[in-house]
Length: 153
Length: 153
DNA sequence: TAAATAGGGTTGCATAACGAAACCAAATTC
DNA sequence: GAATTTGGTTTCGTTATGCAACCCTATTTA
Image 1: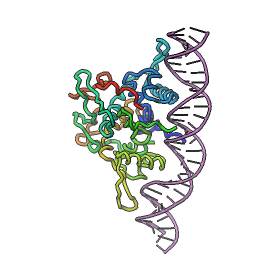
Image 2: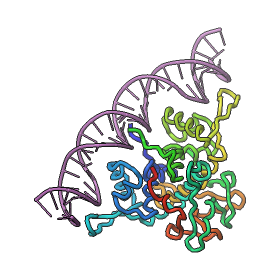
Image 3: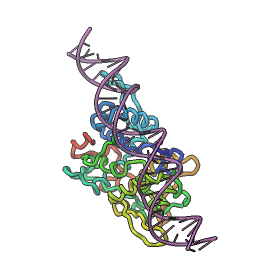
Image 4: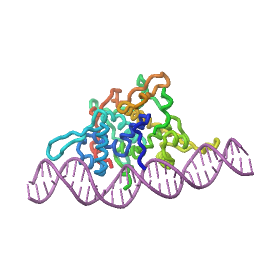
């Protein structure tokens, strides 16, 4: 049967996963952050099937994570560019990257750290922070609204 | 055909998604962060099919995101608890939650913000930060290793 | 002591999603 | 005007997902 959808879930994590929670969408967004814009480039760089790429690009455009821009230059008809909503996934992608680097280091190459273009220094590890910037763990936070912990789907 | 796997990808985002990139795994982790530990509770609170829950729990245990703890109390035989690796997904989950709250606000209820248990204040929005704590956008960072941008799969 | 209930699964089946390769059509280059 | 490039759609076989039913053990309840 069909995958369960979370469109109207009262859990914002579930709603977020509904848009970018599949195997490919976040990788497409990541690739777009690297500068990829054209269909064939996504296809080749990700090694994704064309029909799946079609579907995902359309869905990301529907959800306003990407926008489809018509361009007239030599053969290519349009490009897929990140919207502000799409660029706003940057913290999510970086958090995932750091988690992957920490707990599943690459077999061959080392962790590929991101660096501040202005200073050349590595970026900080992502942390959940209190109002005054102190790092917080799971146990350090609570949710005022208790009912939100139930029934995500 | 089978879903494409990213186990040996040189992209850490792809490797991370290989472990928690499906529709349910991150929600299970989230639920575990809320304090859920038993099979039936995950099942009822998430509304997930039992066989899928079985599969996901086993996979999360395999990947050391959860661990299975035997407990002897009244009928229940074991619990699923977060490991350090699992708790380390906190920034990922919070980043996703904030993105979902910002761009897909819940129809009925408002954004359910997390608060610092010590002060009662709302936590900060997650940002990628430079070495001295300044927020950075996609355009503000670069990767020293250029080849890492290609071929994630 | 028999019966009901709870916890933690497993099995079968129908449907939806995925992946590879082939096919298509408009625009462009040779 | 034939071959290429770009951006898809179609076909088809495999896999994943969801629902419901079943199973086994341990504990309550009658």
